[in-house]
Image (cartoon, rainbow, N blue to C red; front, side, top):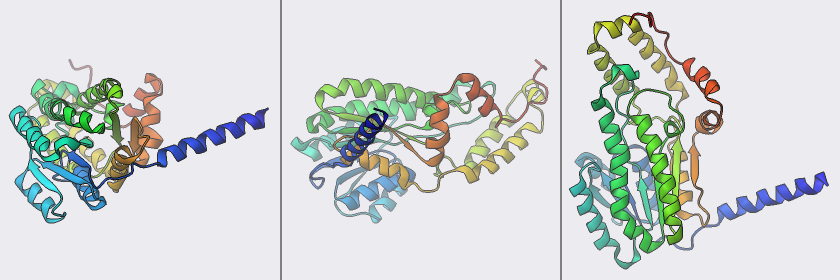
Length: 319
């Protein structure tokens, strides 16, 4: 009996894996729209899907990013300037895309644009420190989605939201983590709402990757700038050596990041082309082996492990 159950499990696993490998028939007539293509995941995705034969519409924030991407891709790829926090810019872009795709609709929407914002202890921050990540990572993503959704529904296509392991586990203060938690919630509600229309919605949760967004130098500069503006009381609680120790620990963590950005793009590819796309994709060894499993653990274990990474305060009772 045990052997029969084992054989059935193996067979189910084989069939599940086989089902996930089945691809859509033709991609050369399909349009996809990608945000945040200046650098990082979005840039590599635009170049990769252009080579595969998709009609890629790549949105960049800067003129320099747009020009550089256009120089590396085919004439089939279209580039656009887009600030996802500008509602009028988003509306104009959606109208342009509508005119471009016509009756075919938009097969794929990849919401990739994002910013890190300030990473610092919560009591160092103001509400303004939270505003930019939430505006870009959440409201910008929602605005682009709502404007493009009629085109995706027409194609019975795919929506792919790039979240983060920070949407599953809060590992630092600042607006990035709350914005990504909210993206996860929006992604889940959107997925269920779109199921009746034949639209698949997937969420990608990358681990720690070496990109411009996670540049340790810029992150350290922001943290140091906030430290310099803190009140004497806060500095006394944390200790004058706290910021230096934080920056040293940050440098030590650089070796833990993933260097291969194609791991994320491969998840996008599967979500775009598989007949059975997954609802969630974990990208990076750290995400699969540590962050995602830890997110399912009891809070007491999460706190124990994550607090091990934090610098000890000098005098937390000095309040």
